[in-house]
Length: 220
Image (cartoon, rainbow, N blue to C red; front, side, top):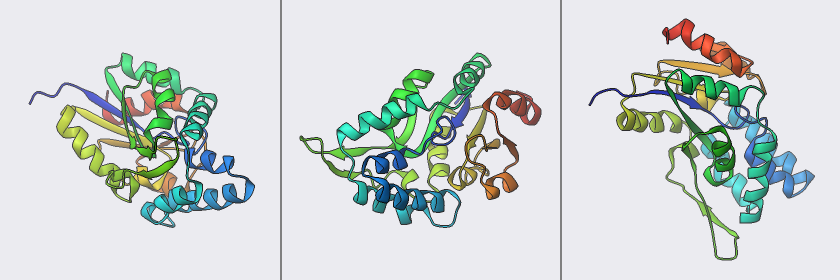
């Protein structure tokens, strides 16, 4: 297979958007639920708990509806990280194919992806009944558990056979991809996580810095 693409993989929550989608679902359920879910999210993103320890539990507490999905989708659009759209436009012009790879929910992320011109979304599907009530999620999807993003990346490598692959994200689940990509860039523009900042090969706080960092480390 002839290499035909350079892949730039973006985490979504706290990377392309200033929110954590699951926390926005929780906010709809009131202050107490929000506090509970937010604490679980931070524990997972900081690496204090494995993703799988909180993933299904948070959804069972919230039980998001289709109507909630629409609300959170709009929240993603309203909370885009400064410089994100310009960064992606620049990377595409330089020959990179952008992909969102997230432990969030595909249906909620789709409006933001469309806005940014990203057609490939690797994220978790939620399931609903005919009334729009929550019935579950894709439990087999890799990003529902620790070590999941590297598995998605291995599949993308087979699908795209890229000449280069770069990942950028804020959390420990993103940091786990460092050995699977040519360059992992930690992002601290929304939340700066100490472990990510310490262990990432490169670390930025502004997405406009990304093209320069890739040029520095990869010459691309």
